[in-house]
Length: 313
Figure 1: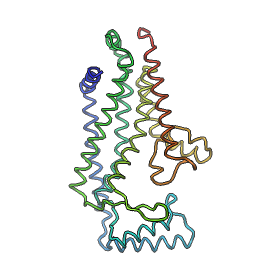
Figure 2: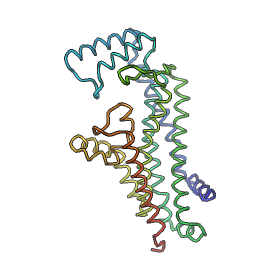
Figure 3: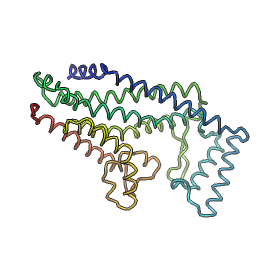
Figure 4: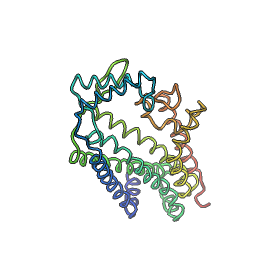
């Protein structure tokens, strides 16, 4: 198995496109940093301290409560007031856009770009063997077909993890250089009281949650590539679902509860971090179970068809 994985890894890095993807991820991280620095320079306001800003925010929130106005995206104004008051009492400055932790939080959007590259690799890693005719060279070796396919899937996963690691390392380095440290404490309202939590743990969870969508779509692209032997079909379907699936599911979920059983209703686990499930009654345990089921279905289809197929056809 190790030799198969090493062979796949060597084939992957023998292509110029692989280095282009890595370079694009690095450039995207640098570009995101430049854009955020530019936005901060435009919106920079030294007229108020953070304490004065929180007091003004509390006054606005109290007015919202008096008028019965709902908070942004279901945010409870009373909870925000409690968090602000706790921050003022304990001298905990909030993380603004020009702080290290906010920068890392916002940099998680780069995972979508990584997902695009991972889908391209997953879509071609099996289908290209058929289109180039090299699949027959693999099959004449005394190795089980499932081991060949598993080595390809592990290679795709390892490549995606490498891109995520590169993005995280570059973001941390750039964040430490160009942004203020900020507060490592994250204030949340739980069980009727304000609780201090770790910003580092929160950012790590965000990276994991944002990666789930990518992992599932990459697995789907891998399955389509193995079943239909068509990389264009796998790329097209997977990218379409990557950019449209979540929005379409949100629209359906507004009218039908059965939307909770769809893949895209469960990939965004950060909905539970904000206590805003896409369908009322959904839990993180439910979403994890659904993701495991979808993953098992995709992998079963891929391995079943690949091991049973007549390579000569």
